Image (tube, one colour):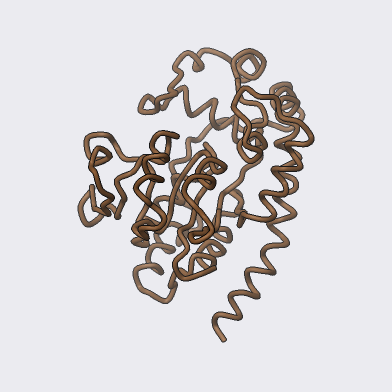
Length: 283
């Protein structure tokens, strides 16, 4: 990685992305994501890096990375070329990569991944309570997860679709899975929600984060220091493999599960590569 790379974090819903944002806000990385409209400055005519929450809340750039129109505005304003952001957080990595980076301004993509069925179960329990989310669904509180999985879950192989550049309601195919696997292998540093500390360690190396600084050491201690990671996780019943709801969600997301199994292999392979790179830097 070069000194000036702007890292793109693919935020997969309910996979730990909010925690990652908290860690790098703490480490004083300037972030491009989305802010509440009242403080976002997204109507401004020029890009600025500012502290909307005061000194304790991290630095942000005045763009909205959660919509295509927001990313197109960031493209027109030269977000990556400006060097104002250290990290971009986006839910549409193909679109972000295509519109925000070019041959002169390349970037690494990093992401956290979670087993697709666990992720969907988490989404089901979270959105029945999360009245601050646009997709809040209080009616889900009155149904079983099996009923939701059979009749109300609209997600099917979304990771494969996103990586292959397909739309939400397109049908994912084996060919799309192969594209997704190639994209991950060539472009991504993969992390695992179930192995967050090691994943963040690798992201830090790739991003040239100085872990000798007191500030960054304190941030790692703040999030990982007491054995339990502080996240915005929502405690909920565990969905057991082989249960009826698990089987329905696994059937509807079979390609995403194959992709996740490939991610586990990549995670093992990349560990050795990243460590040898880190040894090279330190010598």
